[in-house]
Image (cartoon, rainbow, N blue to C red):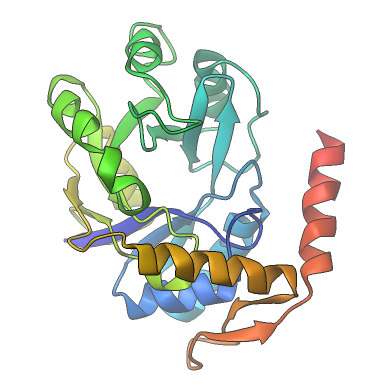
Length: 257
């Protein structure tokens, strides 16, 4: 059986603190087979990860966390960024046109940018869209206090169940993972489409200490420091990085849109 964490953020997200290389290093150390970097409305991190992943002994699928009009959505196996700001159903159709599938992250909770039960059920009644929305995140390490409703309702929905870290700091990667038959990205996609995935939740608590740790790393990021690793052989460490380069690439992508 393979394991995957398909909801991870890198420095290409405004609220994350880890370089792509550090994500890959930590994922390999955590024993994952497949990952997806799903930055907020930015796909460059995942494409960079896909190119580098073989050096770390794992696979990275191209992916993004899209801000739809109705809430956030994980677009998996896409080579381009679906346009942000569209209704959920229209976003799903765009993802389908790009050859991808989608998973609803941290759904049915009062947190901002989470999809409601009503909008997800509506999407599942729409031809075309229901073939693209294939999974639901029933365990999210970062929002575990709000996951109970999604866990209960997922029993009645025709969607594969996943668990993810939603990591914004390197040490959280793999804290919440999805088990599937096989070990490759292709096997993972097949398992999601066939609704055979097994969510493996994070068993610890997302404590105040961990929240403060994220706040500290966000502060360091503002001063040009981030969690980084130069190769698969070097540990993850706090290092000075070129944040302006990241900002410029994100802004360039947004101007094109």
